[in-house]
Length: 423
Picture 1 (spheres, rainbow, N blue to C red):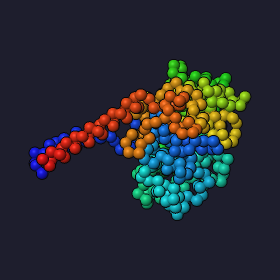
Picture 2: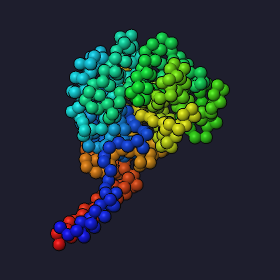
Picture 3: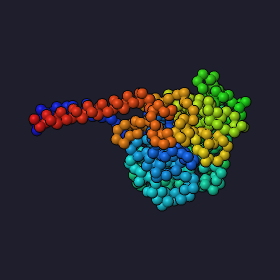
Picture 4: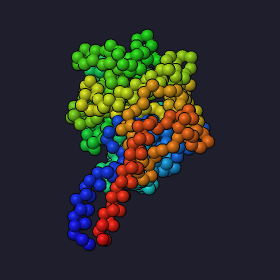
């Protein structure tokens, strides 16, 4: 093999590697995710969801259980999953053997094809209808699952947390005076210690909609909708100024953590595991309209895409999971509960969003088994991008074309060099 050709190959190799696409793993640049609930009997198949995510520019998904077929639908897409451990499993996974069995049965088979970043142990356990029965299992379940992941060599890849209702706060206004309910402190303080040790975030389901719906005369709609240009509200205790309610709710949680566990407050990040606005509701559900839902969710996208933090934590980018991907027709409760989706079950948008995420929010790529290309599920198959569904933007398609061009260029260069090596 001629040394001159070998030297040329080694000289060009670094440049050629730069042309190759990155691996289809989720990246830290994507701050926005979406919750994918499946409480419905008319929802599209899970295999259609990755394409819908591409059209939205969202690369993170929160699941509420570990259904194997649903998890498998995200294999080789680069979409990052939060996998839920359902409430009914808490007692079983609160022992080392039970947690190890759950991880072995539900998580290990999906790896490494599916990117799983978090396990959420239960949902709103401390404030739910079964809190008196389940609260005792919450922290042991979190600890045992973390230990099971560590034993499997997965604790650096998958973190363990749980999602709380904002009702864990005794008061949230003003944010600087927020604190946790005293009856929950015996459970919450050790949970905060766990987060600090494990490096996992404190998750909260935060809904400005509820605050507005409960007191529409006392809460300005524009403030709850995160509208640009709102004068905002001053916190007299901290001197900080809040231009939208979501940031105020997140900072209320930060203040409550600080009041409960000052050591953990320095290490624990607060993330929003659910937020949304219903597009329809009962007669007494004030503000539940398609127009308000479009404004709120569009503003959430805009806010998160800025990559900024809250007034109290300006250097920590706000991370949010919108609720939800689809309207779910079997959810109990008022009409609003069945109308949080950005999409109807047939794949058409529930309303048109006024804001589109920048393309770099997505964690998917077109390499390998990626999800790029094509239209969105339309209830019968895959529709065209002009069929009334959210579609991949021109910028996204240009990016995909650029990757294909680069891959072709690398292949051509390598072929030429290999031929030279044998001359």
